[in-house]
Amino acid sequence: MPAFLLTACSGSSAKAPAASAPSPTVDATSQAANVGTSAGPSTGGSTSSSSAANPANVDVCALLTQADANAVARAHGLDGAQTTTTTYTLTAKKQIDTGIEPTSSCKFTIADDGAEGTVAFQVGSAAHFSVYSTGTKVNGLGDEAYDDGSSTVVRVGSLMISAGEDSFGGSFATDLLRKMVPNLK
Picture 1: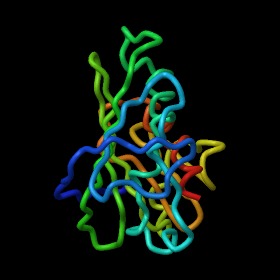
Picture 2: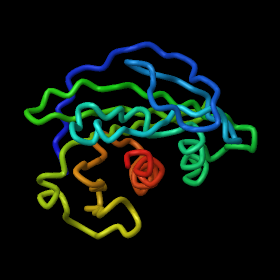
Picture 3: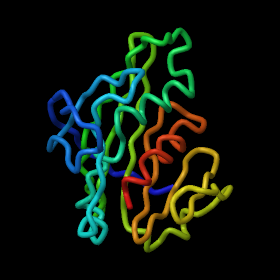
Picture 4: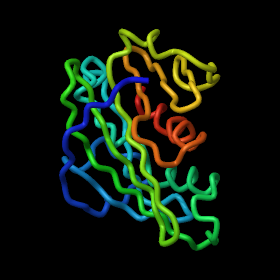
């Protein structure tokens, strides 16, 4: 699993704009949005081909939408007492990466009144993907993906995305990646 070198996070929370499709960018430092039971406003987006050339230009926070975070939280029963009206809050905060190679990271928090969890994702170059491609192959995720039991790493073209800090455990982060990877292409 790639090592995360995260030294700081900063920002303020802002309500995501209403939109029916993922927006291409997010607030420069962070965003917060209520994630309801219906496909609400989008907080996600896609990267451009120029972003793919330099992983540091990828807006990782824009890869996960409210609706997708809600779907994964519901599927995993994030709050065992959830009801059809339970509203989850998705907060995304860009992380500052200080590693040698250019990367981009975002820490996501998904919560409601009864439960909360966080997971950080990092996008970097896939040049050394083979070093991280251990464990069980995950079919149907990116160009190739592997789960070593504690994390999943995914190659999408010349980029690699992986989970770092993960308080959810199990397949929660992998299921979030299934929602995020299509926005990375």
